[in-house]
Image 1 (tube, rainbow, N blue to C red):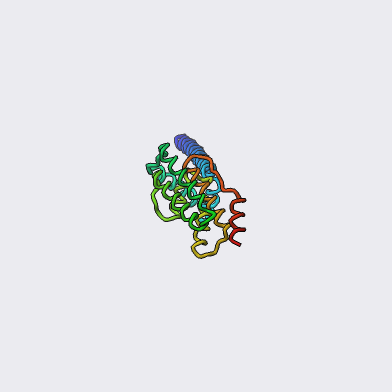
Image 2 (image 1 turned 60 degrees about the horizontal axis):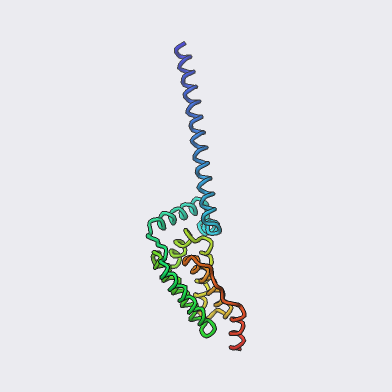
Length: 200
């Protein structure tokens, strides 16, 4: 009878342990699923890009969580109204020079975006680190930053058209406006077209 009770107690104990293990696994899977969903919603297209670049969802999610922690530790600041006005005026000024100097305007746009990022509190590391940092709070526009940077690199090798330069300035402005917190005012295509006709 004692041995029988021991077997019943052992079986009951093992059954309880099994149920607890299944419950623990279920809770872990739900948390993991919720974490994946949260990262996908926060990072959008950047999530898929990171998964593709790193080759696995687990590595990508670890990278995105590390970005969140890193950016959370930064002392990012909103701009004072006077600073925002100054940056907006500088953008308008550089944009007005596009017709006469498209390449120079692109270089100025890159410089002004970096200056704004620095003023907000982003460290000026290499480009990939800057893009990764921007992706945490500005995931919808980080691809614009990458596209503009790519065109700027091509422009250094004289592999761009005026239309490429116009697109790059627009890309930079999308990020600039998001960092600044104002709606972008885009240069009109007609202005660029007049410039191209004047040069031919």
